[in-house]
Length: 291
Image 1 (cartoon, rainbow, N blue to C red):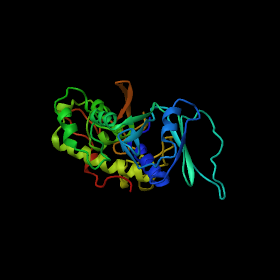
Image 2 (image 1 turned 30 degrees about the vertical axis):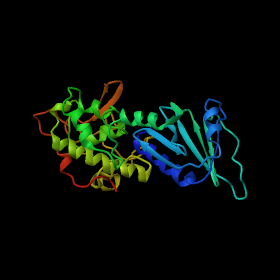
Image 3 (image 1 turned 90 degrees about the horizontal axis):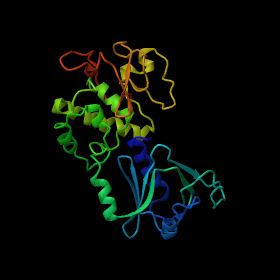
Image 4 (image 1 turned 90 degrees about the vertical axis):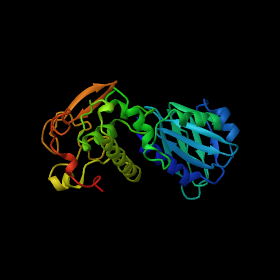
């Protein structure tokens, strides 16, 4: 499932390509036909994101609400010189949006619906703060974390607590904090939470900019360490995510994996020791990421 930085990139892409101009809307698949017909020819007013939810705004306080889920994907295409018609429909397209210079096709989303202001407000109300939104308040998440007996790893993935964080950012930010992922939320120090939030803000902003997740500090890049680049279809340089059994970049302890709340959890047992034990000091390294 795409993490929050991907949805914010989609909002930026829709804004760049379509905002402020009329767009033609259709639903080749048919499941969104009534709403597409209602909005067809309207101006896309704005596009925004909260966590893993995308909102496309149209006049009259109407929004197309999209949640990609596991299989959803947007594909963008530009018109060739002299063309004004989009290419043929390929596959099952829930929503097609056509503008002045190109089009976008949405396939396989978990959610694609037309909603009102009240319905949109209810979506926001059930989501935690999003590190990529300027209106986010980390205290909202801290109030839940500081009282919870659940592990910090589980809490970071709960979209009601924190919106937009997925399995990659969860694993990596906990490693960078040197924090045992199994520690209960109520046993996490406030200063540790503040550092995690600041790290998420910086890392996820880089994810928006680069369209990939890079979390290793400058001194741990392949170039700095003389190691081969990561080979993974997720891309990006990481410390522990999907590196099961491989040596930690800091201490060379094999990275571990376990299932937690139905998702794979990755961590280094030396750099992220249980409470009362000292780790290998990953937090002593300066900088935010390899940028």
